[in-house]
Image (cartoon, rainbow, N blue to C red; front, side, top):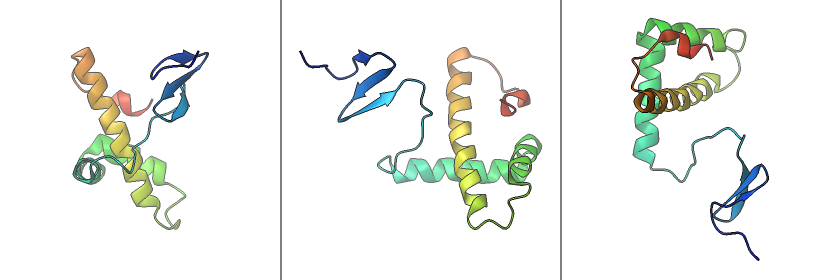
Length: 104
């Protein structure tokens, strides 16, 4: 008997044409809407340059890697994913933002 979409196989889930581990880290798909990804990147850019808490987080991650090509963009993409995750979590828990969430 085949496994339908979304059914579990131990620690793995069947999604569409591939299996994913339920412990895997989510990431942005290049198939997602470009405008949405651009808006998230811009939010991460502004946060990493204007907000003190995000600036500390960003510079801490950047420290020692400044000369690596494209590292600032890579870190801002990771920061945009973190912003999205934090926003989703805060909306679901109905909590205000706490800068200590950046540490985890």
